[in-house]
Image (cartoon, rainbow, N blue to C red; front, top):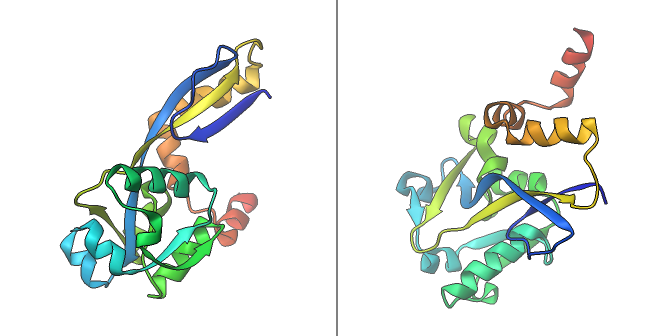
Length: 178
């Protein structure tokens, strides 16, 4: 492989160069007018009683959630999981309709929170942080393009601007016309 992006901790390996480029946090996401939205945070006990829409088993987000819950003496089976989906975008759409709440990356809900569609809140008794890392092969020299890409990921201001871009088809079409 030439380059990879992974979430969560990476085991030491002499053939890998691991560079952290971002720290992500998983947050509880509720519809903007949900009663919890005004509270700003919930407990694990409250969360365990809510209808949960989660990422599928095996996803990086799900693994981080399961590991952090286990550290606090909880099991994912303690929660009322009503739906599992393979796409964060699908989860956000389902949560926006009021069918449940979720735990996903804070990075992925910025726009919906700004547009007052969804609200991100904290879990009082659990921190769900995870590093985002760039992996490269220690035995290969990066190409010019790979160096540009890695530099872009390390440029916090530019990376945040791209994360906050509206990539809807209408805006994409508008950009193509310019």
